[in-house]
View 1 (cartoon, rainbow, N blue to C red):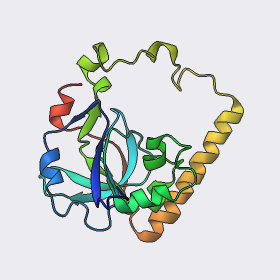
View 2: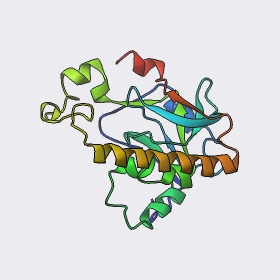
View 3: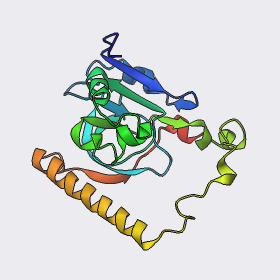
View 4: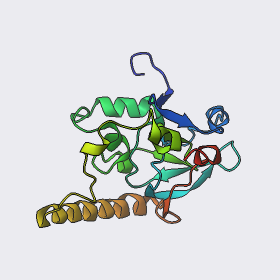
Length: 200
């Protein structure tokens, strides 16, 4: 993007399914207005995150909301050249998983960059669909992984997580409270576009 001076790009993983509204949304000339640096389209089913007030788009029923907390997943998003340059300047760009870097607390971009989430979410991965869980979307690693809920968590790990959460919420208050964006924000489970929800 930077070398070819591409102003913005839609980045997709190979197993992503897009909502019917995506083409019309991409045609909206005001989609990136107001200094938007990225827009995440995806939701991982039960994703809950803090988002700012709805900013209407040119597509009825679809808004973009400022992302104020972690919302992992990098299957479908728009990135601008401004954010691409910001990422290339970071010394840790290759040390974090991409979704943690772009949309997670660890990457800290949710505080510093103007990153938004579409509501409803306009993308899911194949493994979230009924068919995907049966076939192509099913990972051969699933049976060998322990979920976070099943892992034994020591007191030290719990304490570390508590400190991270405290730091995050303090940063949210300082960053978005000072800018006025925190007022009218809400933590919610992301709705998913109707044509995608039918596949789940």
